[in-house]
Image (cartoon, rainbow, N blue to C red; front, side, top):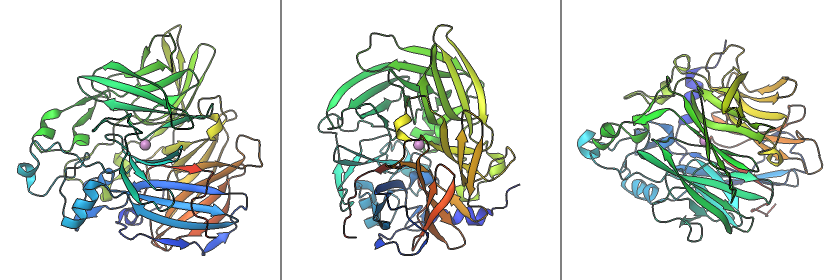
Length: 479
Ligand code: CO
């Protein structure tokens, strides 16, 4: 049984319209002195516009949080991504765009009919690469920010690579070899187009190629190995009419077809002469992958699967979510056999979990430790994420740090300990909404023994975020 309250959980979805800048002084425990660098986080910061609540948190404007760690101290700064839509809606104090996940302009279907002008809200992830700080949203180009000030510099076409209106996914993968930035862009339609981009560490495009994929695609994430890029084509269909006629947001028109199989699309990377391979398996719906690696006869792939798509119900208020009626995310392992063209699947973690993360040196490589946000329950029931879980994929052993009943975790980020060699030598950083304080904490967990090393109390809350990343550089140095 879980003992959180829905009121505590929902309080983490209140808008944060202030922008802060301060040295974090209220700290329990000790920041590891060798933890030096920057944690960037992105997520919806506004959950209402002019007092009108958004229908879905994924429609909220992107707010960047930056935590800088240096000499055992920490500094916080947050700034909104000043997108065109954010600036226009803030000055009008009204909803002017349709949201992908169902937020409609006031005025009912007459105001929304045939309005396919979606707002680029830049709210899903944030990546620092070769001097570019990019706020990512999968349906449009990234916004570039200044890493020193977090000021928005504008839409960024990756030095001429993206054309106006092109997509660039919010889940880039970094191959430790190079390192190399690998990302994709999806143009969904009756036949979809998947483009893969690879950039070297100086931001130079070293490879790109487009592939036609039969059928409509809803692909949020992908995963790489040294030789392949792997995509799961969820079994969905897109109902265009309610969207065009202004009755539903685009995300509400994606209909999951649980009776159909998921296609696993394996695309050879770079200039390989191998053919694209498609395998099929009953996998449910997948947003996120944990990792993948090459085996003697194919690939081993670990992903978070839902047996039903968490749908956006018309007129439902997400703040009142009945978790018992939503299927939990579960961690599954898929063993792909290229010769047999078969897929074997195995349930690794049945309890509700999401936001997998691992040591960045093991991306695409055989690995042992996976870290996730998970529900604080021993049952296979759905509940908010309240603990950070460590899985040993070799022994099956589990360790967790729980923040229940009043703490709610976000995606953990693994940071390598520069003095350690072991795969789990490092720290996990996570923003935890602390309902008792009505404010957020940044927690630092020792990834080896899963002990809490420090809790940094912020002066305010950060609405539940989506994704973030760690950079070894510091962009704030006045401390
Ligand atoms: Co995601």
